[in-house]
Length: 258
Picture 1 (spheres, rainbow, N blue to C red):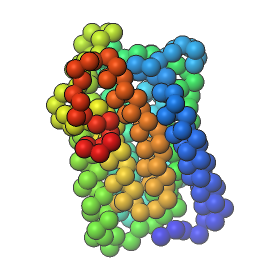
Picture 2 (cartoon, rainbow, N blue to C red):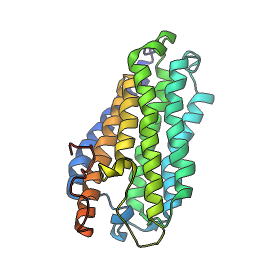
Picture 3 (cartoon, helix red, strand yellow):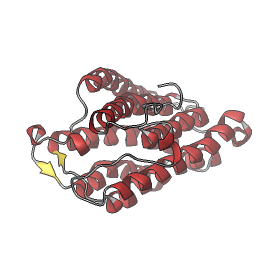
Protein backbone atom coordinates (compact mmCIF):
# COMPACT_ATOMS: atom_id res chain seq x y z
CA UNK A 1 0.00 0.00 0.00
CA UNK A 2 3.02 2.32 0.03
CA UNK A 3 3.95 4.49 -2.96
CA UNK A 4 7.61 4.44 -4.00
CA UNK A 5 8.63 7.75 -2.42
CA UNK A 6 11.55 6.18 -0.63
CA UNK A 7 13.26 9.35 0.61
CA UNK A 8 10.18 10.87 2.18
CA UNK A 9 9.02 7.50 3.43
CA UNK A 10 12.33 7.10 5.26
CA UNK A 11 11.96 10.57 6.81
CA UNK A 12 8.35 9.76 7.69
CA UNK A 13 9.45 6.61 9.50
CA UNK A 14 12.17 8.55 11.33
CA UNK A 15 9.50 10.96 12.61
CA UNK A 16 7.44 8.00 13.83
CA UNK A 17 10.47 6.50 15.56
CA UNK A 18 11.30 9.80 17.27
CA UNK A 19 7.74 10.13 18.56
CA UNK A 20 7.88 6.61 19.97
CA UNK A 21 11.23 7.26 21.62
CA UNK A 22 10.11 10.59 23.08
CA UNK A 23 6.88 9.04 24.36
CA UNK A 24 8.71 6.13 25.97
CA UNK A 25 10.88 8.54 27.93
CA UNK A 26 7.94 10.80 28.80
CA UNK A 27 5.91 7.81 30.01
CA UNK A 28 8.39 7.08 32.78
CA UNK A 29 8.82 10.75 33.63
CA UNK A 30 5.07 11.29 33.76
CA UNK A 31 4.68 8.37 36.14
CA UNK A 32 6.85 10.33 38.56
CA UNK A 33 5.67 13.88 37.85
CA UNK A 34 2.20 14.73 36.51
CA UNK A 35 2.27 16.95 33.43
CA UNK A 36 1.97 20.49 34.88
CA UNK A 37 -1.25 21.68 33.28
CA UNK A 38 -4.86 21.67 34.42
CA UNK A 39 -5.10 20.94 38.14
CA UNK A 40 -1.33 20.47 38.28
CA UNK A 41 -0.52 23.76 36.50
CA UNK A 42 2.63 25.55 37.76
CA UNK A 43 4.18 28.84 36.67
CA UNK A 44 7.68 27.38 37.18
CA UNK A 45 7.26 25.74 33.73
CA UNK A 46 7.03 29.07 31.93
CA UNK A 47 4.64 31.97 31.64
CA UNK A 48 0.99 31.01 31.71
CA UNK A 49 -1.25 30.99 28.62
CA UNK A 50 -5.06 31.09 28.95
CA UNK A 51 -6.39 27.55 28.66
CA UNK A 52 -8.73 28.16 25.73
CA UNK A 53 -6.07 29.91 23.66
CA UNK A 54 -3.47 27.27 24.45
CA UNK A 55 -5.73 24.40 23.40
CA UNK A 56 -6.73 26.04 20.11
CA UNK A 57 -3.18 26.88 19.05
CA UNK A 58 -1.43 23.72 20.22
CA UNK A 59 -3.95 21.38 18.56
CA UNK A 60 -4.28 23.37 15.31
CA UNK A 61 -1.39 21.75 13.34
CA UNK A 62 -3.46 18.57 13.03
CA UNK A 63 -6.19 20.39 11.11
CA UNK A 64 -3.91 22.74 9.18
CA UNK A 65 -1.64 19.97 7.90
CA UNK A 66 -4.59 17.74 7.01
CA UNK A 67 -6.09 20.60 4.98
CA UNK A 68 -2.82 21.43 3.24
CA UNK A 69 -1.87 17.86 2.35
CA UNK A 70 -5.36 16.97 1.13
CA UNK A 71 -6.06 20.04 -0.99
CA UNK A 72 -2.64 21.37 -2.03
CA UNK A 73 -0.05 18.56 -1.84
CA UNK A 74 -1.94 15.32 -2.48
CA UNK A 75 -1.11 12.12 -4.23
CA UNK A 76 -4.21 11.80 -6.50
CA UNK A 77 -4.30 8.04 -5.95
CA UNK A 78 -4.34 8.54 -2.18
CA UNK A 79 -7.08 11.14 -1.99
CA UNK A 80 -9.24 9.18 -4.46
CA UNK A 81 -9.08 6.12 -2.20
CA UNK A 82 -12.22 5.92 -0.05
CA UNK A 83 -10.49 3.99 2.77
CA UNK A 84 -7.81 6.73 2.88
CA UNK A 85 -10.50 9.42 3.00
CA UNK A 86 -12.44 7.70 5.78
CA UNK A 87 -9.32 7.25 7.91
CA UNK A 88 -8.41 10.90 7.39
CA UNK A 89 -11.97 11.86 8.29
CA UNK A 90 -11.63 10.07 11.64
CA UNK A 91 -8.51 12.08 12.40
CA UNK A 92 -10.03 15.39 11.28
CA UNK A 93 -13.34 14.66 13.03
CA UNK A 94 -11.60 14.26 16.39
CA UNK A 95 -9.40 17.32 15.99
CA UNK A 96 -12.21 19.54 14.77
CA UNK A 97 -13.82 18.89 18.13
CA UNK A 98 -10.58 19.08 20.11
CA UNK A 99 -9.32 22.25 18.40
CA UNK A 100 -12.43 24.30 17.64
CA UNK A 101 -15.20 23.11 19.97
CA UNK A 102 -13.72 21.67 23.16
CA UNK A 103 -11.59 24.74 24.03
CA UNK A 104 -14.57 27.08 23.76
CA UNK A 105 -16.51 24.87 26.16
CA UNK A 106 -13.80 24.85 28.82
CA UNK A 107 -15.23 26.19 32.05
CA UNK A 108 -12.84 27.91 34.47
CA UNK A 109 -9.82 26.18 32.96
CA UNK A 110 -6.46 26.73 34.59
CA UNK A 111 -3.82 28.41 32.37
CA UNK A 112 -1.19 26.31 30.61
CA UNK A 113 2.55 26.87 31.21
CA UNK A 114 4.46 27.80 28.05
CA UNK A 115 6.74 24.74 28.17
CA UNK A 116 3.77 22.36 28.26
CA UNK A 117 2.09 24.32 25.47
CA UNK A 118 5.25 24.17 23.36
CA UNK A 119 5.68 20.41 23.83
CA UNK A 120 2.03 19.84 22.90
CA UNK A 121 2.39 22.03 19.80
CA UNK A 122 5.52 20.19 18.64
CA UNK A 123 3.83 16.83 19.18
CA UNK A 124 0.76 17.89 17.18
CA UNK A 125 3.00 19.24 14.42
CA UNK A 126 4.87 15.93 14.16
CA UNK A 127 1.81 13.73 14.55
CA UNK A 128 -0.27 15.85 12.19
CA UNK A 129 2.42 15.41 9.57
CA UNK A 130 2.66 11.69 10.32
CA UNK A 131 -1.06 10.96 9.89
CA UNK A 132 -2.06 13.44 7.18
CA UNK A 133 0.95 12.92 4.93
CA UNK A 134 0.59 9.16 5.10
CA UNK A 135 -3.09 9.21 4.19
CA UNK A 136 -2.88 12.01 1.60
CA UNK A 137 0.33 11.04 -0.16
CA UNK A 138 2.29 7.98 0.96
CA UNK A 139 -0.35 5.26 1.27
CA UNK A 140 -2.97 4.04 -1.18
CA UNK A 141 -5.49 1.61 0.29
CA UNK A 142 -7.42 -0.50 -2.24
CA UNK A 143 -11.21 -0.11 -2.32
CA UNK A 144 -11.70 -3.67 -1.09
CA UNK A 145 -10.06 -2.68 2.19
CA UNK A 146 -13.46 -1.19 3.08
CA UNK A 147 -14.62 -4.76 3.74
CA UNK A 148 -11.63 -5.78 5.84
CA UNK A 149 -12.75 -6.74 9.38
CA UNK A 150 -9.96 -4.62 10.86
CA UNK A 151 -11.22 -1.55 9.05
CA UNK A 152 -14.88 -2.10 9.91
CA UNK A 153 -14.24 -2.93 13.57
CA UNK A 154 -11.76 -0.09 14.01
CA UNK A 155 -14.06 2.55 12.52
CA UNK A 156 -17.12 1.45 14.50
CA UNK A 157 -15.36 1.28 17.88
CA UNK A 158 -13.52 4.55 17.16
CA UNK A 159 -16.87 6.34 17.37
CA UNK A 160 -17.74 4.50 20.58
CA UNK A 161 -14.46 5.77 22.05
CA UNK A 162 -15.20 9.29 20.84
CA UNK A 163 -18.66 9.12 22.41
CA UNK A 164 -17.17 8.06 25.75
CA UNK A 165 -14.64 10.88 25.54
CA UNK A 166 -17.28 13.49 24.65
CA UNK A 167 -19.72 12.35 27.35
CA UNK A 168 -16.96 12.32 29.94
CA UNK A 169 -15.86 15.82 28.95
CA UNK A 170 -19.42 17.01 29.52
CA UNK A 171 -19.53 15.48 33.00
CA UNK A 172 -16.23 17.14 33.95
CA UNK A 173 -17.39 20.45 32.52
CA UNK A 174 -20.48 20.44 34.73
CA UNK A 175 -18.26 19.94 37.79
CA UNK A 176 -16.27 23.09 37.02
CA UNK A 177 -18.98 25.60 37.83
CA UNK A 178 -16.77 27.32 40.41
CA UNK A 179 -13.27 28.47 39.49
CA UNK A 180 -11.28 26.61 42.14
CA UNK A 181 -13.61 23.71 42.91
CA UNK A 182 -13.30 20.11 41.82
CA UNK A 183 -15.78 17.36 42.60
CA UNK A 184 -16.11 13.63 42.23
CA UNK A 185 -17.23 12.88 38.66
CA UNK A 186 -20.26 10.61 38.49
CA UNK A 187 -22.16 8.99 35.67
CA UNK A 188 -21.17 7.14 32.54
CA UNK A 189 -17.84 5.35 32.65
CA UNK A 190 -16.81 7.48 35.65
CA UNK A 191 -18.71 4.97 37.77
CA UNK A 192 -15.92 2.52 36.95
CA UNK A 193 -12.75 4.58 36.37
CA UNK A 194 -11.35 7.96 37.38
CA UNK A 195 -10.04 8.65 33.87
CA UNK A 196 -13.12 7.94 31.77
CA UNK A 197 -12.22 10.71 29.33
CA UNK A 198 -8.72 9.27 28.95
CA UNK A 199 -10.07 5.76 28.46
CA UNK A 200 -12.33 7.04 25.66
CA UNK A 201 -9.47 8.76 23.88
CA UNK A 202 -7.18 5.75 24.18
CA UNK A 203 -9.97 3.56 22.80
CA UNK A 204 -10.40 5.99 19.88
CA UNK A 205 -6.80 5.93 18.76
CA UNK A 206 -6.29 2.22 19.43
CA UNK A 207 -9.20 1.49 17.11
CA UNK A 208 -7.94 4.02 14.59
CA UNK A 209 -4.72 1.98 14.61
CA UNK A 210 -6.67 -1.22 14.04
CA UNK A 211 -8.52 0.39 11.14
CA UNK A 212 -5.37 1.76 9.50
CA UNK A 213 -3.17 -1.22 10.41
CA UNK A 214 0.07 0.60 9.68
CA UNK A 215 2.84 2.29 11.63
CA UNK A 216 1.58 5.94 11.73
CA UNK A 217 -1.60 4.99 13.59
CA UNK A 218 0.16 2.47 15.83
CA UNK A 219 2.62 5.24 16.69
CA UNK A 220 -0.25 7.57 17.58
CA UNK A 221 -1.97 4.95 19.73
CA UNK A 222 1.29 4.25 21.56
CA UNK A 223 2.02 7.93 22.20
CA UNK A 224 -1.54 8.48 23.44
CA UNK A 225 -1.26 5.64 25.97
CA UNK A 226 2.21 6.81 27.05
CA UNK A 227 1.10 10.39 27.65
CA UNK A 228 -2.39 10.21 29.11
CA UNK A 229 -2.20 6.79 30.76
CA UNK A 230 0.00 8.17 33.58
CA UNK A 231 -2.28 11.20 33.86
CA UNK A 232 -5.25 8.94 34.57
CA UNK A 233 -3.26 7.30 37.37
CA UNK A 234 -2.29 10.67 38.87
CA UNK A 235 -5.91 11.85 38.68
CA UNK A 236 -6.99 8.69 40.51
CA UNK A 237 -4.48 9.28 43.29
CA UNK A 238 -5.48 12.96 43.46
CA UNK A 239 -9.15 12.06 43.96
CA UNK A 240 -8.27 9.56 46.68
CA UNK A 241 -6.19 12.17 48.55
CA UNK A 242 -8.78 14.94 48.30
CA UNK A 243 -12.00 12.98 48.82
CA UNK A 244 -12.00 10.58 51.80
CA UNK A 245 -15.22 8.99 50.56
CA UNK A 246 -14.02 8.46 47.03
CA UNK A 247 -15.48 5.17 45.67
CA UNK A 248 -13.11 2.41 46.70
CA UNK A 249 -14.03 0.11 43.83
CA UNK A 250 -13.31 2.70 41.13
CA UNK A 251 -10.19 1.98 39.06
CA UNK A 252 -7.83 4.51 37.46
CA UNK A 253 -8.16 3.82 33.72
CA UNK A 254 -9.37 0.35 32.73
CA UNK A 255 -12.68 -0.82 34.23
CA UNK A 256 -12.27 -3.64 36.78
CA UNK A 257 -8.55 -3.98 35.95
CA UNK A 258 -6.40 -0.87 36.61
